[in-house]
Length: 295
Image (cartoon, rainbow, N blue to C red; front, side, top):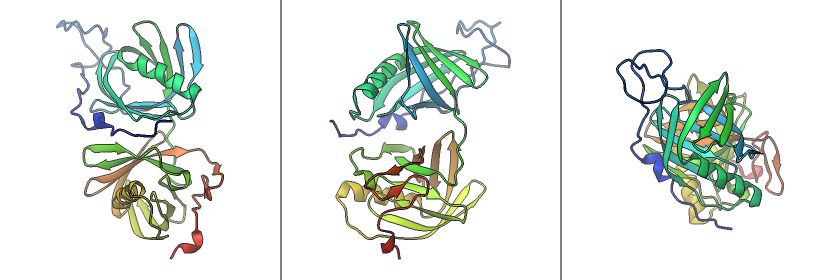
């Protein structure tokens, strides 16, 4: 299994952006540029979309759990189909969405998931026609293949085990190394009593986290004091930088972004409430290994 991970460099590129029409109303989406045409983009940006299925050649396949797609207002697209994290440039013009220059992490995650991801990545390469119906979105390729998506309900901050997947530094985002041991994948869980606990990528931690509006103020954290391989320690240092003092947070669907005043931050995804056997980590409570070592 390939475990090397590439930087999601496309997340740092200057985006193509979205092309908004002048005025309001529905446009034809043909992009003919006529002076009598009013073009209005289908409102797909800034929404966390859950991918339900992909139909290729008339055969419908259910998407792996957690599959999602998001296009931000600056024209950056991110996707996940159960294995790798994918980034691309996106252009929205009327009902047409064009994704190009994809970049992604490089893992092998099993025959079924890999097959779906390969088909999905291929279908996303090029122009898609978007059709919105309530909270459901259909994306159709030029060959007639279709994605079925729906708007992801927004998760609560508290009581969710957030698995850290992205490390942010200003305008640069990199993926957390995919080959970290299961018990050292960075994660955090916020509690109703104003505390947070989890793992930085090597050491477990716990401490205060006061939430007011869109700001989380992290107090001193106490935890274990182990030394780990450099890749894990590098991840830990990046997570520590984001969870120190005041930080701004946003939640879109099941994606949490925390950004400190200096631009250091993390991107995390809500994970199912289950226990990772053999790791001492419980998804629903955020209980971490070696709790007796917390100061």
